[in-house]
Image 1 (cartoon, rainbow, N blue to C red):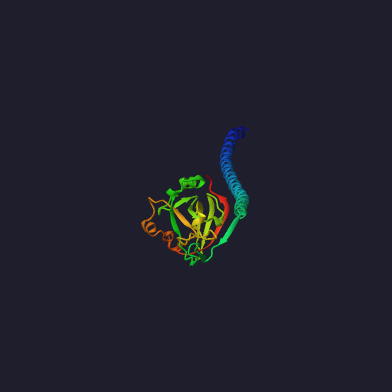
Image 2: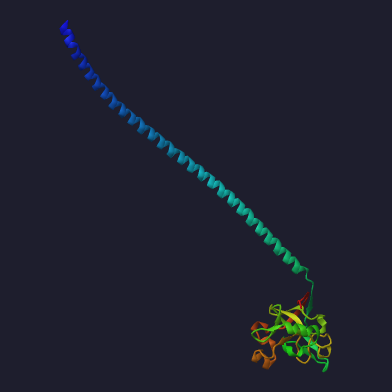
Length: 255
């Protein structure tokens, strides 16, 4: 009995020792399990994050595409409106141009000299007249406002000042086009009136110079060759052609 009692503590100590070893193994196993679970959890969280980010990027891309499409549609609408407005403006300008009344006068190829009675052929001459001579009334005002170009031709509203006969029924500052036989159009403006006594019976041609238009020039700056020969057609080679018609517009220079 005493032997049993003596051995019991030994047995108990051994069992306790085994239990401690067992607890130590369980602890290490538990740590490993926790580590595995933690790593798995982190991997799962990382996977979810990557998925959500990828999904979010897809959503952002889709939203960006939608926004781009909306911007493109809006831009197209704006451009269409601008084009439409521009078209309307052009149409309005064309309508305004069409509304300007004009009278076309055909120029004959010959005239009768009122002094000699002879028929004279018109060969396309365009003479010159000094601006300094024109000092009276509205015609004087127009010449005061005009400026000479590089060749000494007086201009206003980007048109050449000319003198024409009473046949064309023009007033100071009225717009006139000279249409040449070669198709060239010289844009002019009424800057002086030819006296009837100096023109043929139709008041078209100046019978002394055989011309239907006289270009008004600045004597101080007129090109030498033009002044010496008195021929405005020398200004441009394309001007060396007869006037076949004179177009008078119901439009005037602002004074």
